[in-house]
Length: 212
Image (cartoon, rainbow, N blue to C red; front, side, top):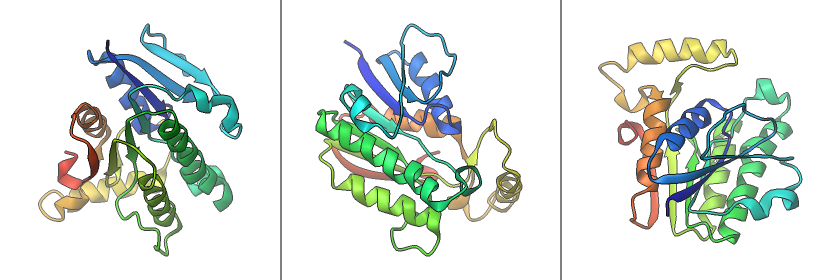
């Protein structure tokens, strides 16, 4: 029997690439995604669950299988308020992780961020750090946390500041500061899948060149 993957954040930059690679991967038999709106993807391996993220009791029993990939995230520009951003970047992801652990899903793979720190003065970095700490206390056989630098890929939404930052980052890290080199989303997704299939249990932080 092939493996069953759960994905939350399937409509985002990393999530889209991850789902595409999972659907093409021979070791994954089913890919279950949790989304607000249909993605329009037609594939025999895809199971699309349309949910209300705020109604945890309506979907938590569905998080079953071999691994949960968590790639959910937003920006303050999209979320409008810090409370909304915290709900997406922490609450929703933590509730999914808790449901997976409670249902016996052995592996959890989280996309966090470089600089994540629960004590950071930067709100975004603090959220990511708090989430890392929280999921680290859940009982998973294997926990993988990825800390990519700025993501390199084609976004549907326009993020002008991020685009400018990506261009500058590509230039500055070509020969120096390689730790901060932009992370191609296709490489990130491929690394997430390959390590999810590694039978080695325990915790692993994956960042920088280890992703690439």
